[in-house]
Image (cartoon, rainbow, N blue to C red):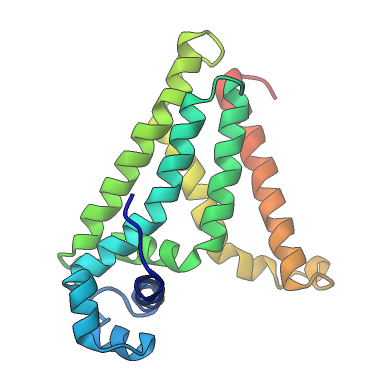
Length: 210
């Protein structure tokens, strides 16, 4: 796994925010340099190009999840459904805390212009599916999960539900029953609500139990 120094991480964080706010094509290396308070030559030295800087954003966000899922797959002490629940909570926490990155994902998938981002997005989704599949298929082979489970749709349900909740939170926040909550309380409420919903849904799909 590639390690980044403090300055590189600062540049990556700034680039991620600008890519989310302005889009990949709408953000220049000069914009990133000014916001990160570095010169363009430093960005070129560390990353080579804007495309490579974007790849660094993706690598940074992917690596921790890759390690986590690999550890889950190899864990012999957890039941399969426990692994699924752990995976659900992992991605809820990750996606809610990395909303700039989720914005990049959403924006660039809809972008009709040729962009290296779309290839990276499909690479990311393919890798996550490849890592998640053994958790389900090994339990299917053991007769714990039903054979008719569509793993691709399961992954889409997981990511899609969380992803759509991110913009919906701003509407939910306006409801009177949540007015008494501060931002941290509401964030925790949203996290728990998502977790409960997805775990019930996945248990029903995987085991046909409600």
